[in-house]
Image (cartoon, rainbow, N blue to C red; front, side, top):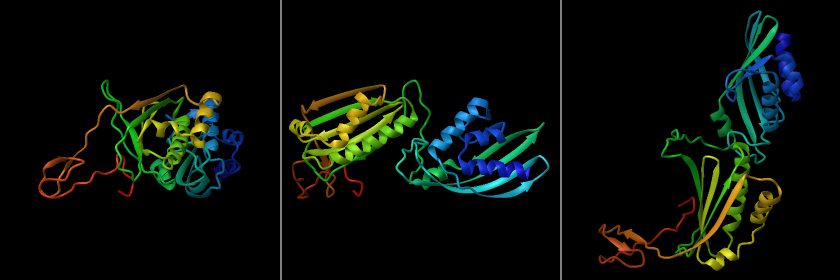
Length: 283
């Protein structure tokens, strides 16, 4: 089994699907629903190598019998395509795991185990767990991009994009990040809330006036529009601009706990101050 294990490690280091499938008849890891083989195995391995092209494995044998060998390994691999909803941003992932190679009737099966949460943390991501969807509620995740401006919103924009799959969703998340980052420098931009539910990505942005919305011509926004209309990005989109009919802000006084309108001082003398619509992270 040592020769087989060495061929297996060499195939990973070479990044060759052909060599990997020549060693293993079947394979399972945390991303497969049980063992896969044949064309399904080749497709899965190609996806792994697309996301992490180079596997300079540092491995050692920790247990061995005539028909089984256990390898522990660690690798730092370049992240080049979305994985677990994490867009590729040029970072490296550090992964540690175990491969169990078993030979039966001349055929080799491999069971791989590694910690996907640890992998995500190595890319700078923390896991968030969602309850299962019901016939009433579908859960998702969100983020906010704030500003220090405390002006009242006079206009809102609401957009959504429907993505083909999780991999495209990660690309859309990265595009959205670049668009919102560029908006922070736009006059009249107050902040944005970005949230995803199922295969749909929403962005709700607030501006001081409709003129501030019309003045948005940031290059990341233009690139995203080209990707949708010319590059085949997403399966559908919605854009809209909304003007304000009315708004009200009420604040609780820290001195006497009375509720006062946001533009007035409290009768006790305190002057509560409103936070920005979407605060900056440090706030």
